[in-house]
Image (cartoon, rainbow, N blue to C red; front, side):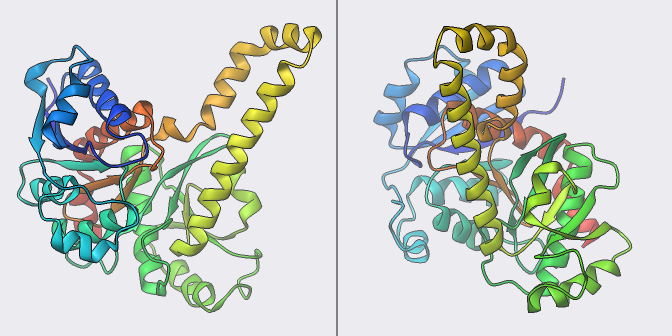
Length: 332
């Protein structure tokens, strides 16, 4: 039997908290025997939601917290002053080794600040990076960074490339993952100052499979496995991806229901179409791990449903089983 993975879930964070958060946690422990979930939040509220589901009581517990960090709050001040919040209490459990991972759909700023200030960076890591999986024609790619470092240096991007390669090779099983840096053209001399400075450094890295510049239009085709950029560019790519994917899925579904002929056609292609559309559903891939910390912190979308929370918890199993942090320490 595999080792139990203890995951703290912020029950109060996100647009759909606590309903969808608790539901996702309950589903996770019901479907996997090696998960123990710790829900942090206001006990009465969380207990009321948890009572709706029949799940193993010995593998899900509630830790009461009296405070909630709201999305609009200044993150640094919130982490400092709200010591009994669901985010701070959850991260403290990871810091003290009482849990293997922390998952939250709450304030992105608070999760990023808390990850660095409470959980702490791996020695040698200059900046941690948010790294979500994004769908491509043939599978997925890792986008790193998408939200943690708007202003980055070339040395940061080199570390992002290395951490992303380790993650893709060990969690996704991609042998010698291809690494590309986001640019406005394929030529090495193109790009802004950051890209021009980083490109030759990546070329010199013998421990990664660097393929050069990648234009945004090439990303959905799966031209590379690790897409490297600073967080401003990464966040724009991610939000465009999500918006375009959601719009196209809605348009396709709408066109299939226009008349009797399209409805009949929809029935014929439904199985194949369902699988294709599912691959572009961001909730299928869980959240974005904050790579480079001493423990695992996973940030999910603020609008996360139970499915995304459940899949984010499964991410934590793979992360621990493959000992990603140990491998990052060994390589950097």
